[in-house]
Image 1 (cartoon, rainbow, N blue to C red):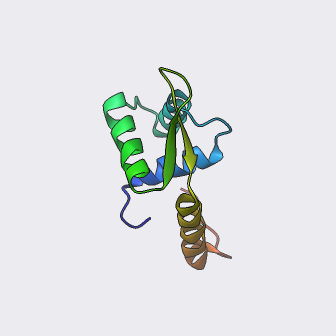
Image 2: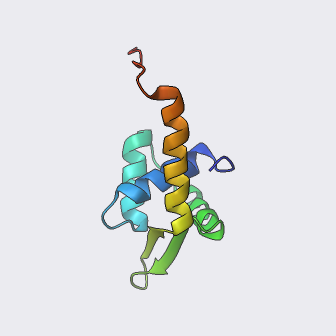
Amino acid sequence: MHDLTGFQRDLLYTITGLDEPHGLAIKEEMEEYYETDVHHGRLYPNLDTMADKDLVNKSMKDRRTNEYELTDRGRREIKDRAEWEDQYLAGREIPRP
């Protein structure tokens, strides 16, 4: 996951957490988190890059909607990232602003 942008990592986590991760649902979640519009020209090329890297499978739900699902590699990357974060965060109190 070290070669992904922060936006791509956020997409991966979002796909993991959605029951039906399709383009519009992912876009809405990302807009809520980023508190700004996420344009199609940013969203879909990044999703395609993640599919090219074998982190997600992209399939057609219908003629206008693509669905995204984590691959085995995507799940491994999420797990590995969580373990990496835990080595620095586990048992530590995170200061509040």
